[in-house]
Length: 381
Image 1: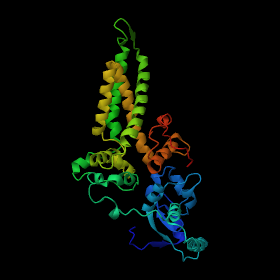
Image 2 (image 1 turned 30 degrees about the vertical axis):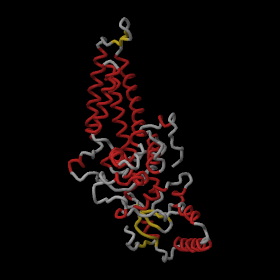
Image 3 (image 1 turned 135 degrees about the vertical axis):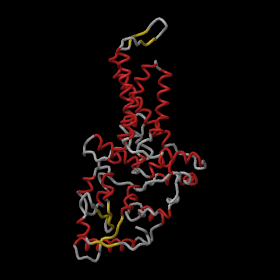
């Protein structure tokens, strides 16, 4: 809703009627929000919101057990649709009127507060979260963003970590733009046949019993076919480390404020995902771009290990990559069962997007966050 548009007013009964997957509304005090499109995205699952549909969710937003971040509250404002009718005769409306009157009285009594105190108080209110106004944003959303973000300079880091719920257009050229988008199913369609073929190739080659690992010119040991699963798992484990390093040190590098090109590269690689975390067309890597990383991984392994051993490790790592991309998509759009491993992982990843952008770099697991001290503090949802 545009700031210049007069808000619509709804009675408490009208709000309470919207309590299904097809139409789900909630309130923050007198402010009414249509969160239907957010149900699938919620880290705690859609059931948590549906149980509170049509009601005031201030307690859940503030916590405990989980106090939502400023980014989460700002995100909420994108679904604002109007106000509760304070003139209705319901008990809830009367209570709200009394609370508002008391709040106005408190505000009057505290009019002598310093500017710093007022700013601190504002951070604890919900109405301070302004509606996302694309016309007043730092970039022009009507034009491709790729060539604009580099001009943000020192404002880029804060801007890119304030997520919005709308798709991003990176390039004006339709073919170039299409090349940056991929449906999730193309990842298994392209890479799983390669995983299956090389798994068969490596196992049957080892089964011939002719593969030996030469330790010295006079000594070598045979590599049995039953070692293939171990080599495969080694590759998967190696990929998990690479996944963490790429996410932390490449995707989350902080480009110098004065460097237009590094800012642009960062935005294309990962910044656009943090700005629009639910853009479904950019949640997995396009196979063309992914092939650069996959090919590099393969060449490095072949240069350090004998051909069949390097290929066996490679195919495990490639399988780990496919699982990584599928899990990443599911963490944004899936609705895992409460208490399951994926439920906790989804909550963990969403906290990385909305609150702890400098931590929580593990996607398929939190394993590497432990030794590198980047674990997001545990918090119940």
